[in-house]
Length: 276
Image (cartoon, rainbow, N blue to C red; front, side):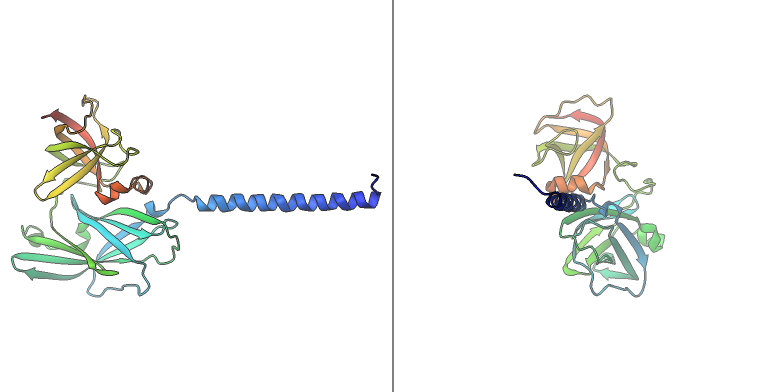
């Protein structure tokens, strides 16, 4: 078969157009794939603690859940879940300045609101956020009250409220988060147990638990001093000194849901004794 010159030119133009179109589609697909794997930005999320007689709560704020709340040193910690991982999220914690009395307790009620409403991602994200409690300017006499309690209320869900006794340790100079100084504890009895996932910590799926009255705390060993010479075994009972940290790495939490369910804290062991 012999092609005429005009037909050959026409075929070349068509081939070139198809090639350019195919290249455009390929680049567009690659861009879409890259967008779908955007690194989580919620590690940059922030929390602000303030004292105000009036609270401005966004009418269209996105629902969230307060999983746990408590103190580490002089830092108030909130562990929360919400939808959205493409943007940093902002939370406000507001105290109206009123000290409430309930039987023998003095109660400070804090209202937590979620200011981020333009993150349309449907991925469940987890964050542990800290803020220094001194910003409320509470009288020192009040803080020394052994029956001072904190109640944290979720402004998107009236049933999501947590209460706990105020405890402070002013020796902590910075939030005890991964990469910083930890919150030290000594002589804590723990038991080694088998967890559901093995992709966090230096001991894989072997984690630690401690029984503190009615409360069981869970820990993942992320580091240990060089002087600690121990081969981990399930069900071992240990007496340890350690520093603990609150998780800030949301990628790790996503990879292991049990970290969030148990509110497991990462620890660095400084001293260890087997007490089986």
